[in-house]
Image 1 (cartoon, helix red, strand yellow):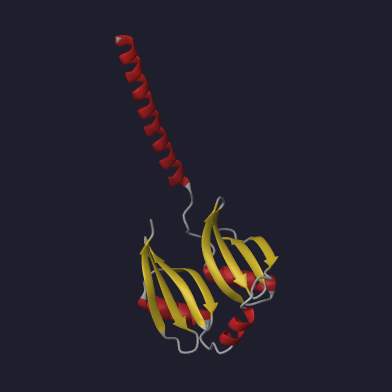
Image 2 (spheres, helix red, strand yellow):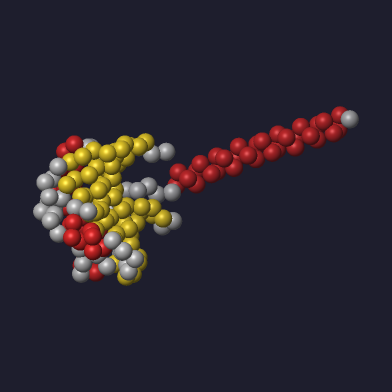
Length: 171
């Protein structure tokens, strides 16, 4: 009877110890995954995409994949992925799925505020760096990240008026 109890105790301790070691190892692996910091700025990525596609950028999002930081860029006709550290084009493909493209283009035709002006106006009211921006229905919609905090900000493309939206804490 004692042999069974001792063997069971060793088995329990072994399973718990293995689980703790796996947890520590997983934390180490997660800590080594690169963050969203990129050597290439959003403006540089925008310029690369516009030059490559000869079209206007509609939205930019800084994301992360298994290789590191990647800019996912939508232009009026192409989807482009750019490596956030080297500036290399990872993907360029035609985007024929824009059903609302005509509606967006007519609303966006009245836009007089540049993307740079919209970003500057937004950053006067919300601290942080722009991680995502899109021109939609005449409004620049952007996500500004400051540490763990992400704030949605909208800038009227005609008047430059800034509206602060929802703020989330990133997990």
